Length: 340
Image 1 (cartoon, rainbow, N blue to C red):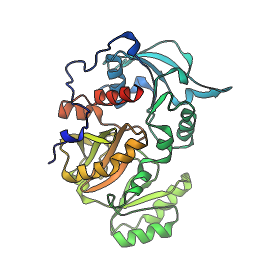
Image 2: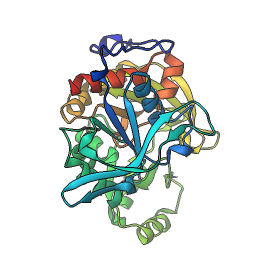
Image 3: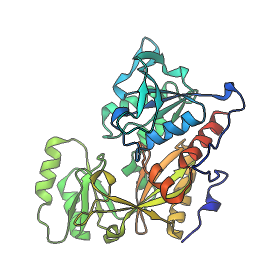
Image 4: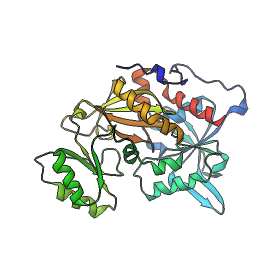
């Protein structure tokens, strides 16, 4: 297994037991906004957005929370209706919120684009709106490239790293792909969290029915990939900061499942990065950094890159527990460096 220390490129490992950042003066505090799903329902022991907010608070930054539907363009100004926020590790009350207020988004130093997919027109519209203030207000990740590099599509730029893949809406193309590879995974192109993922092995006769089901409720294409039996050993999530890997966790599918997403019962486990994992990270890292993708989670099954998650990657808290490093602090160090 490869040691990732050399790949941190100045992003130092930092202890979870003490603050890693001391404000020299009050002027270094930043105004941080989180555009995310309801804060009241987060899992304080698993949610990456919560952990990022917690670390920002430790570092002396002020927090503001708003949901995506409270982002609006009003007569020349991009505004957000939301709440000043203090987070706390109390499962039943993870955030103390002020009364609702309206603030111009340009007043913030950093805005986190952290709502979960689906990657639909509502999601895409928020990226267009946030483009109006970025980069003067740093939006993480860069909304232009989040919009133009959906996770299942960015992988297509690296065909030598990905498993055999086809993206299509017509049944004949997908059928030909299945006839060639026999055992395939079929899923909606813009799905998330393991929803709508099907394995069709050589004996399965349900392709036409599934295709009819998908196209009747959605206009989006489908993605088919050669099934990778290595998934039974886990689907590795590698966290990358500024294009460099800082560590990974393995996600083990439940008994009888092919999906390893933690949303559907996948079990996180400690993992090391292999030479192949490092090779994949080195191949995609420069593009991620160039396009302003500060915090990214990539998925690797066996020797293959399957997804590059830019929208709302997860896995910070699990990696921190397994490797005893402060990943959230590494993310904030990268952001603070960019802001300076």
